[in-house]
Image 1 (cartoon, rainbow, N blue to C red):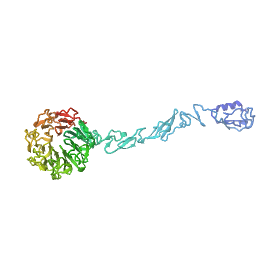
Image 2 (image 1 turned 120 degrees about the vertical axis):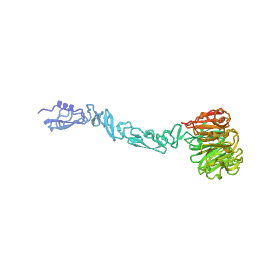
Image 3 (image 1 turned 90 degrees about the vertical axis):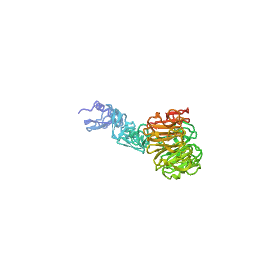
Image 4 (image 1 turned 45 degrees about the vertical axis):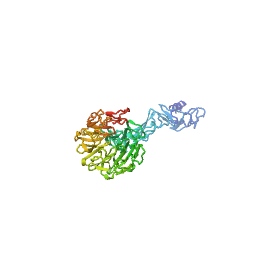
Length: 581
């Protein structure tokens, strides 16, 4: 029988030396191998102890008859992995592709939300729908859900919404908007970005655009300039509910807390942003808000502010006794009146000539009712020392001083209670009061004036005072608005042309001269663009449909509002600095 030689054994061992702990099967025959090498010897060698034969030191393999196909464990740890493999613990691993040993032993790739692979020694996850690897660590797989507002549809794709709430659905930010806001830019990620209460390009709803020179206020498009009032100073109410004033400010009539004149419009911030109307007296101002409250400020020597004091105020003070139902107001030299929504009329301030209308000549520091008018007043105007009110039945009533016939009752007797201007019948729809004259526009478009006429302010071609209304016949029946200054008058016709007459010492007629005019004269620079008209102490203003405001006349306090601080009168309309869109 062939002998199993040392050379044969070494050849077998060499063939498997690379696999530590590998079991070798040999056909030992009658004298086969019957022993194992000591652990950790790195493979069997000739000097190992034999189990059944041979000398321990002879290098002979055992000679006893071992059984065929005996299992032999070869090597315990001294071998090395071949073919690009790396020994990791008790196994050989390919560090380029093994997900449990990717790039290094025991560096495993995991992915609870998808599949993963080890490519070129790096973990490469494949994500399930709505998950992604957002932390830059591929080893932990697709750890981030993409259905949250922090990662909506993509890593770090954040949903924000300062004006509402937002949810993430199907990978898209879905905002829910607070009242007054909307998402108009088709970008749900930034939420409800648009204030549809004030945005003129998205007014009320997305893509509802206001017209040229219009403002968006309370989700409704409004003209930029809604109302203008003027005296020794001027105030304009904008469509957004803000109030802007300029001109004389000695007593704080601009309402900005100071007493310096302003030649350009400044916002009366303290009046708020919900102004519904404004009236300007000689050196004081009153404005009513959408909540029906009335606030006044400025000169208060005779209680014309109505706050029960005689202290001037440079900031608005609320006239609480009137409550929250004020619908209109009028003021002039040193008294003020307010009409409430229930039709009652209330007046206060200087009362030497009975202009308060309460039947007395007592000064009133707080509002008192003109009770004889009942609850039928629809409009009120104030002159220097007289007052007039229009009633629901179209009749006109006046009271106070009457030395030049300004009450229109055919006399020159003062009246402490309202008297009916009976010659006008019941077809009056608008009234205006100057210092000592009054004009009324009737439903047929005709204009009638009476009272002082020294400067031709009645427009009848003469200078004689009139105690009865007389028609301004040259204007025909086309008057749509009338405004009265101290000693001058202006009217706007159906074609939007502007006409003025009367005192012109400061250019308040607007015709480029300082010559008084006893008949209506066209303010040609305005053309046919005016949509609103007011007259003040010795000045006037007209607003155009495009938001431009023009003023002319006296400018000693900056009441024209064009930034000119030279105090030079403007003999023709000058554009104010009140900006519109």
